[in-house]
Image (cartoon, rainbow, N blue to C red; front, side, top):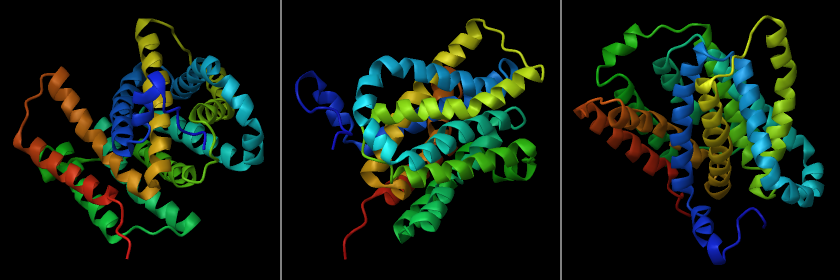
Amino acid sequence: MNASPPRSGRFRPLAWLTDQPYLLLSLTSLFWAGNVVIGRFAAGHLPPIALSFLRWSAAFLILIPLAWRQTAKDWPIIRGHLGIMVILSISGVATFNTLGYWALQYTEALNALLLNSTGPLFVALFSLLLFRIRLTPAQGVGILISMAGVIVILTRGDFGTLAGVRFNKGDIAYLIALLVFGVYSAVAAKRPMIHPLSFMLFTCGCGTLFILPFYLWEMSSGARVTINITVLAVLAYVAVFPSILSYLCFNRGVELIGANRSAPFLHLMPVFGSVLAIGFLGETFRLFHLIGYVLVLAGVFIAARKPKRV
C-alpha cells in the first residue's frame, strides 16, 4: 500500500506519526478548533464563499509542487474510483466548509461548538445507513460521556446557560454542514488506497471547482474581498492547518481505526479551544474545565478503543 510514507532514513519520524491514529485525530481537532474561531472572526473581513474558495485554492496551489508527480502515478486508480473521489470532494471540501463559513456569519461560536458535539452521531448514522456499520455499546457510551464533557466546558458548568441559547438560520445551516461531514467521514473509510498527497490534491482541486460558480455568484452580488495583512493571515492559517494538515491527519486516522472510532475525537475541539483561551487570552482555569476535560477524554478513550473479538 502506498498510502504511508517510507519507513527509512530521515522519514522515520514521519512514518511513526502516520501510524499513530490517536495523535493524528487529536491534531485534527486542534487545527479545526482554530478554524471555528477564525471562521467567526473572518465574518467581518471576508465573504463566506470567498473565504472557502480562497482557502481551498491556496491549499491546492501549495500542494501542486508537493503532490503532482505522485498524483500522476495514482491517476489510473483515481480515474477508476472517480465517483467516490468526486463525492468526497463535494462533501468534505466544497459543501461542508462553504456552508460552515456561511453559517458562522449568523451564529455564535458557542452555538457552533455545541452543534459540533453532534458530529459523531451523524458519522455513526451514515456509517449505518451506507455501510451497515453499527456503533458498539462502548462507542455509544463513550460518545455520550464525551458529549457531556463538551457541554460542561461550553456552559462553564452552568447548565442553565443552555436555556439562553437561541438558534437561527446560521445554526440550521451549520447542522446541515455537520450532516454533510457525516457523509464524508463515513465514505472516507472506503476511499481508494492512493498516496495521501494525491488524495488531497485531487479533492482540493475538484472541491474548488464546485465552489467556483458560487464564488462568482457571490462576487456578482456585490461582495468584495479586500486584501490586507489580516486577510492574508487568515488565509495562511486556513489553507495550511485546517485544510492540508487536518485532512491528511483525519483521513489517515479514519483509515487506521474507522469512521465510528475516529468521530469522538471531534469532541476534543472545545477542549483545545478552552486550553488556547487559557494560554493565550488569560482565562482562568476553573473546576468546570477539569471536569469537562476528564469527561471528554474518558469518553474518547472508551469510544476509540478497539472492540474486543468474541
